[in-house]
Amino acid sequence: MTILLTVLIILAIPFLIALFSAKQYIIVRSIAINKSQSEVFDYCKLLQNGEKYNKWMMTDPGMKKTLTGIDGTVGFIYAWESDNKQVGKGEQEITQIIDSEKIAHEVRFIKPFEGKAHTYMEVTPLPENQTQLTWGFTGDLNYLMRVMHMLLNLKKVLTKDIDTSLLQLKHALEL
Image 1 (cartoon, one colour):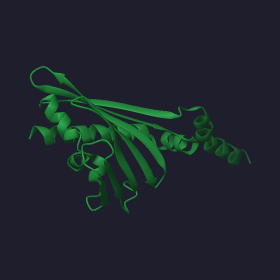
Image 2 (image 1 turned 180 degrees about the horizontal axis):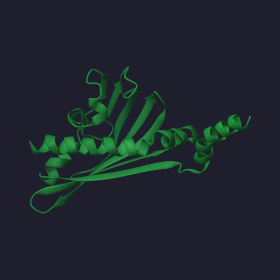
Image 3 (image 1 turned 90 degrees about the vertical axis):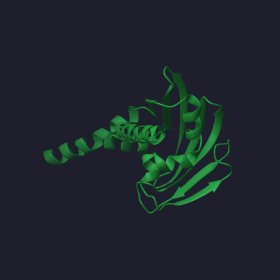
Image 4 (image 1 turned 180 degrees about the vertical axis):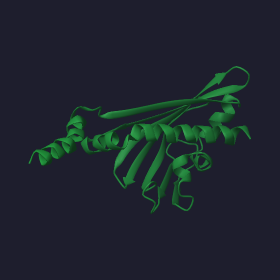
């Protein structure tokens, strides 16, 4: 009986901690790129270019894509669908553009779970024709997602994926 009670308590701990954990996650990462601010911005504002650097878009090259609107403009939607559970189904919409400075998106996840995130890419000039690119990613977490984030350490996984994507973006632009 003591063993069963101990196991139940251990299993309940993550669910209890999730009750008091943050209801939002925020990830902000940056990288210096050896290109001008306008070159970096013009490349990043086109969502389809993500297929060349975005780890998530590159996970299933055969995923079904639906493009709505004009890429690089507010309202453009890049939708995807894949049988690969790491890719799932969702869409990303350009929601704001501040020319040569910032582009913002809303990402709507449909499968394997429903959710919404907000992302942005901001470019800042650095000396010697370099640009700092900052990629921010935020989202709200319901109770079940807080449990998943905690158990799977998803913030660490997402941070690593963004870092990988930024390195691939740097490489793509500096070729």
